[in-house]
Image 1 (cartoon, rainbow, N blue to C red):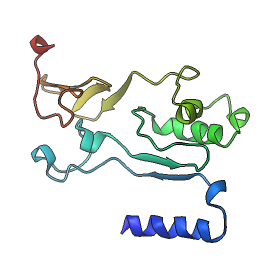
Image 2 (image 1 turned 90 degrees about the vertical axis):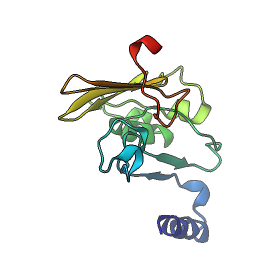
Image 3 (image 1 turned 30 degrees about the vertical axis):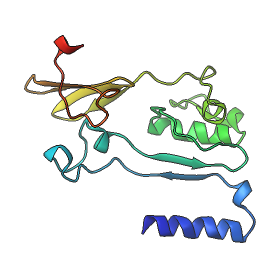
Image 4 (image 1 turned 60 degrees about the horizontal axis):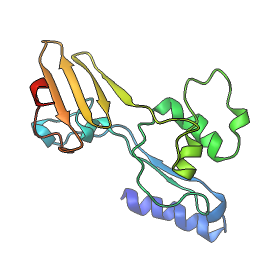
Length: 162
């Protein structure tokens, strides 16, 4: 159903001739586990729950590709202003970063990609990097995954494994 509704928006843009003059963004809330890892609910360290889709269509400016940018919600506004050429309108008080240059060029030298993202809830705390997912529960147990070699986070590691 979501595909159909997004299609209606894209068709309407085409109908009025604004496809090439419009940035379309598709994003959502954090995922639901839906039984993955034997869990339900949200706010888990596993990618099914932790990652958020952020899909941008900007005809004539962005080439199709998948980018592994760990962009946070505070980065959305400055990045969108940057994509629209309004980077000078980003207030100095904004906590987020403008990743627009890297998103357009694929080169993140101007604003380097973050190296990690924090995971926090009332029962556990952790970090996700481009290589590892690590979480420590309130009871002191931990989970560690090498997401490069185990992208579905199925094989728990011990610190002796790395």
